Image 1 (cartoon, rainbow, N blue to C red):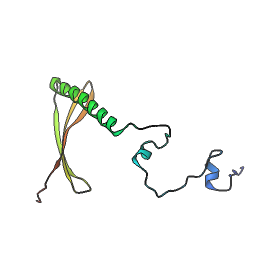
Image 2: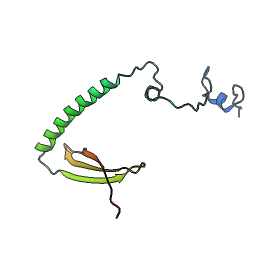
Image 3: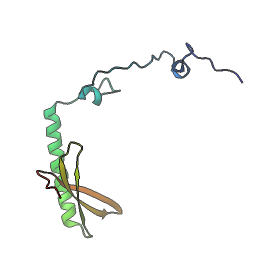
Image 4: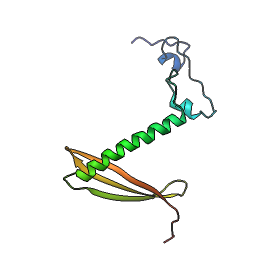
Length: 121
């Protein structure tokens, strides 16, 4: 068989596209904005106040829709709870509801609270 030729004889040269440069390693931590726009240099991020406003608006609309869906659902609603400890030793408790809607399983987180104190057993 014919031996593949490489540019510069390196593994990078064997697989790189024409004109592509090797990746350099940096030990500098990236900012949140750099992480969110990675690979999309033309992307601009909205301000924190715009994001907060949009999240609150979206939450309000979803909350009302889910309230009506759960209130008017003709089938069974299955509630569950779960508790866990995060890696920083903070305890949390969550309540969820699960239902079948138009042939699909839906699950919603109803609430998550941090447990202020955990008593040893």
